[in-house]
Image (tube, rainbow over all chains, first blue to last red; front, side, top):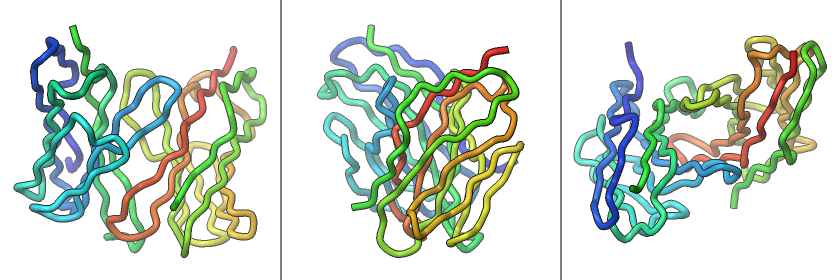
Length: 114
Length: 112
């Protein structure tokens, strides 16, 4: 089945560590996105990529980094510079195959700082 | 820039009550509009969408009509169930592979 796979589902990070969240899609979508979700704040865009080897900062990019070396992969690194990383992280991708954007989401990854 | 405004929550209803969740948007051109649902501990799932003015999206008894004249995409359901308890997000997409914009989401709780 086609879809978006995020891993790990749960991740614990010690202070000062970098961690990487994986996002893989086999939908042949060009655009991919990372969102952060905190209680009561909805979804906030961290980074997005519209094409391989290119990406742009979203609204809250500080303390995060991404890469887009392959069309199907868009990993997110939460660096030690991110002071409050505990949150639910969602990866998404989009296609215009049906004429207008359709957005697909992964199941999300919970990151907790311990 | 583009924006999506959802009504303030949370919303608590009794089973079989009528549901309306308001959503208005600001965007240039003709965006696609979406409603997503998030059940506890899970990612977002597409509930319904509309791609042009006057289109009605529908799924699982939920409906929303793309109203360009009022820039709205209100979500409705005639009779809610306990299983509809979730967080609902309104969203827009201005075009192909464009940055997505979400509302803040609203929590719906349905009592038996």
